[in-house]
Amino acid sequence: MKVISFTVLNNEADIIESFVRYNMTYVDKMIILDNGCTDNTIKILKLLQQEGYDIEIFNESRVGFEQYVLMNKYLRIVSEEYESDWIIPLDADEMLMSDDKPIRAALEELPRDRIYKIYWRQFVMNDEDDPKETFVCRRMKHSFLHKIGKVIIPTSMVKKCDLILQPGQHSVVSNEKVWMEETGILCMAHYPHRSFEQSKTKALCHSVRYVNYLGRQNGESVHRNYFANQCVMHLSDDNDKWFFEAIRERTFKWGIDVIKSEIHPVNLKLQQIEDVEMKYSTLAICNAEHSLYRLSLEMALKSYDLRMESILYNRNMPIILVYGTGGGGSDRLKRIQGGPCTYQSIY
Image 1 (cartoon, rainbow, N blue to C red):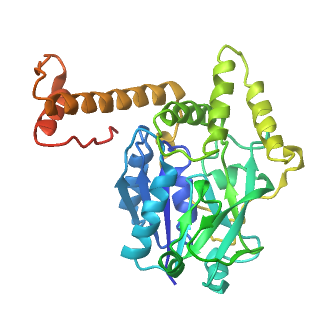
Image 2 (image 1 turned 90 degrees about the vertical axis):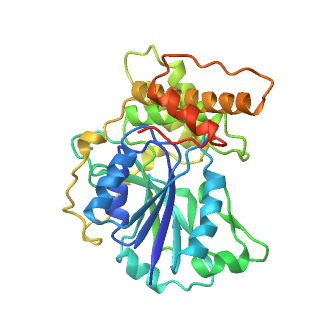
């Protein structure tokens, strides 16, 4: 049996090492789609590649966080160009878990003639968490079973049924009736809020990029925009009490009471990863101001490229070279003169 996961990510430096080290206990290969990371996410991934983890990174840098578009594009690429039995769509804050048996063993037992819905076990921050512990599965132990789930897909069914992932990978649609089954053996450990700084950074940056996302689906990214608005409203606060109230309010909208969370961590011993060593914690620090600045540079460069391309294709408009743009500016000019512009993310 061969299992491949694929993930669209943007600025996940604080969790990406945990994500890889845990999920690679049952995944054979990871396909990572870099949607314009400007923090140390890609640097950490390349260090993990050097350790021997089978990770393939594709540069899919765009202005908007076009997860829906990219996930369906690569669902087909993975099913057609890679040999596998299972395709696991994962966000960077998700990890398959089981209380009863190793993930590989659980997957082996599942028939491959249907789609499986795996419910979130949502992890929440707690005063008992050790802030110095950088392996998120060891640090966060309080969780509750969420009513929202994700799907895992037998590879053979993608082409056979012409499957299309719905936003968030919570479900699929197809050209024929598909049998979807819930499984009690597996659930999806979900760590959306790992720290105040991480949540603030994610929400603010995503809401800025979301403005340029032309392929948005109804309801997509509502939760991120909600937290971004809360951040802006409380910028002058001298404490982060509002942050936990915002999480509670959003969770109530899902119809779930966070107070009912219990100590229910991922069974690391079962996955034989309880003693995993984290090596890149110094690269995993979140800083909202730094991330917003880098995002502003990225979007300005993309706007510049588009403007230059428009000018160069309009032969009636004179081209003026402004000195002082530096090597980056001249490099972009050469690239545009050679043909349509292609943008490379800055790391």
